Image 1 (spheres, rainbow over the protein chains, first blue to last red):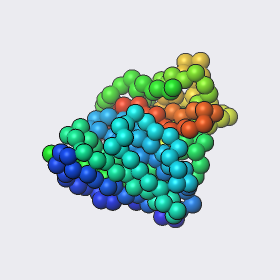
Image 2: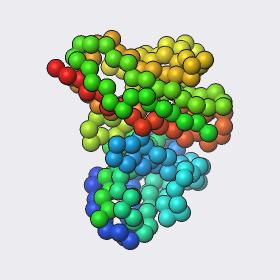
Image 3: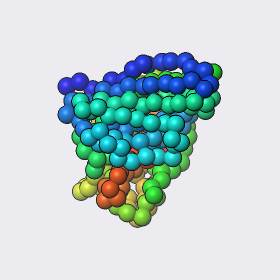
Length: 113
Length: 115
């Protein structure tokens, strides 16, 4: 059974640029969630996708957007990067939307200069 | 909306000593509760979960937690810690009967085990 994989693991961008982060969900999982973890903080919910549709969104501006593909993999896109977007971005997949039990990847660490 | 408070940001403890990491939650509806562990430069790994049934939940690596509804707490305990338990621990809550159920995390407790 393949776990959740994310790419890239590290990347550096400058203010105003755009970034795309990718996630392959665990086999058989149809729900993907994205979280932002700033240094020294707990993960903050960005949004969740269920069967290719956005299923919930946290308190993040519209420049944070996402996609889920038919194979349940997912992308997180961030436009017009700001310094405060520097964080670890975590993708998590789950078998359903009900229990909230998430399986996390190791994250993509984004640094915005 | 749900929220989680982890009462201690850092907990130092000597090897083989017991430890308790405290977690309180706030919710107007019934909840599911979780503890996750994060080792340096890694993602989060599920330690244990409370969905229903027995309020004492046992997890991996010798950890256990007790759900106390009246005190809205879900404290994590281990009777004897090892150096390898040094990590960041996150308590999280979800509300299963509210439709969309994202996990809401606390700010974390850094456990440092001292030899």
